[in-house]
Amino acid sequence: AGNFSPLMNVFRTTSALGVAALVAAACGGSTATTTTTTTTAATTMAGSEFAFGEPAAASEADRIVEIVATDALRWEPEDLIVAVGETVTFRVTNAGQIPDDFTLGDEELQDEHEAEMSGMGGMTMPDGPNAVTLAAGETTEVTWRFTVPGAVLIGCHQPGHYTVGMVATITVAG
Image (cartoon, rainbow, N blue to C red; front, side):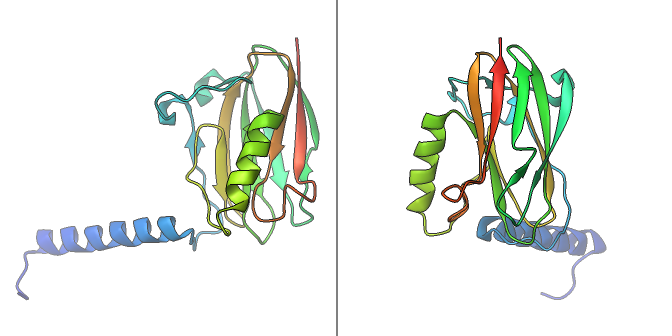
């Protein structure tokens, strides 16, 4: 049981690290202070459709907009204007010390998501094409194509955040 080849030891170590990473991810734990991930059309769940736009590849972005989540439970900036048909990569940074999530959606989607999250007792949802959870200090990107005029909201649905106003408004002009 103790005589493994060097290749087998590498395999066992790599497998153990992979399992540890999966467990940490499943439990919402993170020891990294800054990471970068990208949510694009390639990670869209089959059948997902949104009334306010669609996920897009980062390579299709017309511009990058920096968004910051703060421990004051605010988004910076709180108001944005985009054009119908514009594709935007949101580079979202959690500058605070507590977890936040970035959820793009119209008011109906935000209200549904808030009700869903409030019944989960502080658990987090898996990332989706329009929503990501950010640990303290983490940066991630979400790329979105805005297809219809109107208001799209950025909401944080960590316990208590949305209800105290952690919401930004994107005006889609067209």
